[in-house]
Length: 403
Image (cartoon, rainbow, N blue to C red; front, side):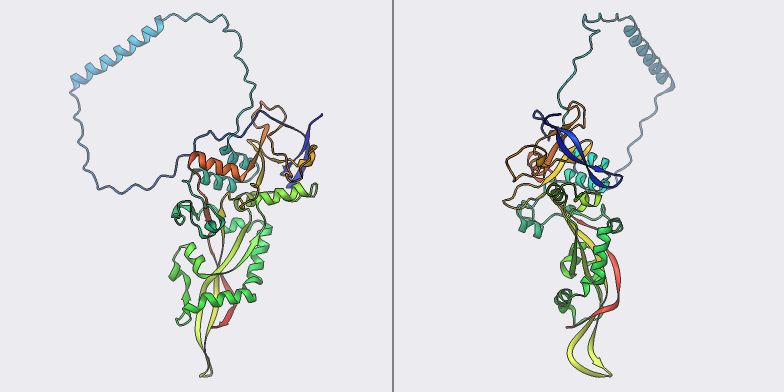
């Protein structure tokens, strides 16, 4: 059929993009942002002092209670008789005619995307996006602010903008590409020259002490551990926009198929931080060889830290996140239609797969900027920092440094 476009849909059996035909541009549809934000998380209520127990109402005397019950029954019977004696209202002359059919395109609100993500087998990504929608307004105006975790008010991110429960390290490691980078971090990266130099800088302030247990300094605060003792990293994968971009520019190669790890973390990083260090003097057979201190790093913490944000790079077009509907996500390359622009590699219009008046058939292009517009409109939506749980990894042999 004329004007039909090719599109890519995820085949969940083999987890590859599957090319299909039959998408058509819809001019009269637009993404909705009308739905009210979720209720904000409740702040803990201050503990009130114990109140005195309320005085119990005295029971009515038996005779008074009997009169009250008789009155209730009489009133109920009276209301029933009035209803029974009321004549049925005459039917409208057009009562037999069916109501008019609304032929308009059903709206699709941006807050429906998490539900669509679950249909694409992305439950963790869906929960994180729902947390973002439910959060109070929090974002970093610039890239530098985002790195420093400073928000729009010039303040550090508040504690409720650190998420430590929704993403677990064991879950991340179920994905093969993540496990390979985790193994690379432990087997190679932490013993590299760059890592040893970073370790030296981290440990010098503590060299004159005895054994160093970083939990004694940081407790359970992941941000403090990261700030003081992180020394090596290994980056994993790409963002949803990057994966889709690969598919758009390398058609039929099945690059960039997103999964739940992509939806949840996008491009993320494994970090290694100091766990335990044993310090000693440079003494051999009772003889001090130098004034150096020896540090043996016998254990480290490994974890994932990631920023959940919809920030675009300054001066660049907002990242394309696919065409979404309540049915899921599709990708539509620009070369499916005649076009003169080579700057836009995808169709930037709503499209329908079938009858557009059926819910879920119209797919809308989604960008990072759509989430920013939603923030401005509703003054809600909180960018936040994700930390997984930490895993303590003993090092055999330890990493030995002279300080």
